Length: 119
Image (tube, rainbow, N blue to C red; front, side, top):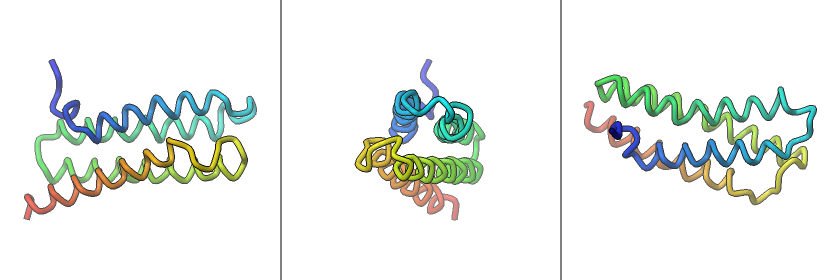
C-alpha cells in the first residue's frame, strides 16, 4: 500500500537525492567518513523523513511545519555540498547541488500552496 507522501514528487525527488548523496560520499577521503560525509547523509535522510512525518500528521498546518524543517535540512545539505566543492571532494557542477535547487523550489511551492489553503 502506497502512503500519501509517497505520491508526492518532492518526496520521490528527495529519496533520489538520498541515494545520490550516499553514492557521492562513498568517494570522500577516509578521514571524512564520520564527519562531513556522515553529516551530509543525515541531512539528506532528514529531508524525505520530515516530508513523510508531516504528511501523516493530519493537518495542513503541521504538514507545513515539517515541510519547513525538510527545507532547512535541504539547506544544510546544500551548504555541505558547497563545502565539499571547496575542499575538492566533488566537482563544481554536480547533479546533487542542482537537485537541491530543484527540490528547494518544489518544497517552497508546496509550502506556499498549503499556506494559502490554511488561511
